[in-house]
Length: 163
Image 1 (cartoon, one colour):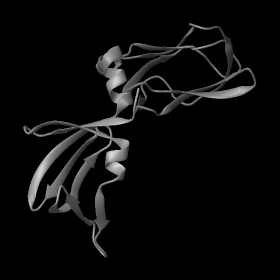
Image 2 (cartoon, one colour):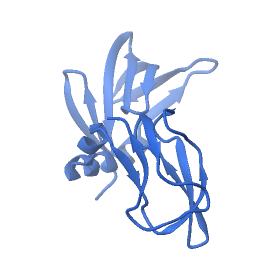
Image 3 (cartoon, helix red, strand yellow):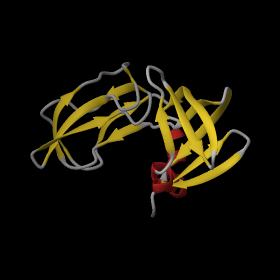
């Protein structure tokens, strides 16, 4: 799979660029400003970033005074979409299970607590390595089924979430 990026530009269509094509663009940052100047196919463009949402990989940019919303997809985003994993992220998660056998080193949440996606909920030790188990999405903890010092097996229920 090559390093190609797809830019979806508002209602104007989809464009694919290779990493080399992006690298070869003639873009200069203007001094003392968050603005750029680009020459593309012999035309001059003034660019500025208005906003960027990393989670959605979406940017609002100004090009010669006109605003455009651009969604960027790289090869990993497309692979996740092809595998259907992007749909799983939007589903509600009911529980967190042990991904491997190990020892619960620390529990960093409690019943009733809320956690944002990627917050550490539990620390496990497996094969002499500490593993941080994180919230898969924004969740509210309904019950913690383990305590520090407890040995768990792969697939054991660790934490339940409200759905």
